[in-house]
Image (cartoon, rainbow, N blue to C red; front, side, top):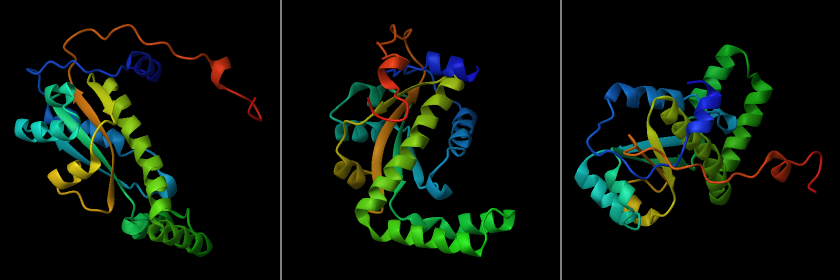
Length: 205
């Protein structure tokens, strides 16, 4: 499936065939593709909890206003974003130094930015939400490419999710993404605004 087909066929699916399981190899390829997502400073702050066990999905559903598709999907991915920018910083900077894309001057600037993000909770939250949301979108597009249905989900209690699934305070619970195989053909796509309705050039008009 080429990219145009992926974009035009992706839907937010809430009705899943509960009998169809996603092979482990497909899940592995899905997250391999997700790993290619760009992120601020290439710090890749995301982590993913793939919830497949029925009892755990019931626990998760209670945290998500009892939304039916949380229980019906083969898996629900809890998308997490770390607010600790320094968590991967040494590995990332060492790789860039080795490949010649970072010198001592750039390293100093990089370290300062990482320190600023890591010590400012609000800045760290904004930073991780932006980068991790990119990974969540990659997850949904990659799922479509691999023949899977998906749906992003925001309606949940992050404190309850954190407690139920032992998530450290360092991580923001950014969203859920349900995964599985659609039980029915997707409905006609909801309306989308046209290019002229959403794009300005040079200034807001």
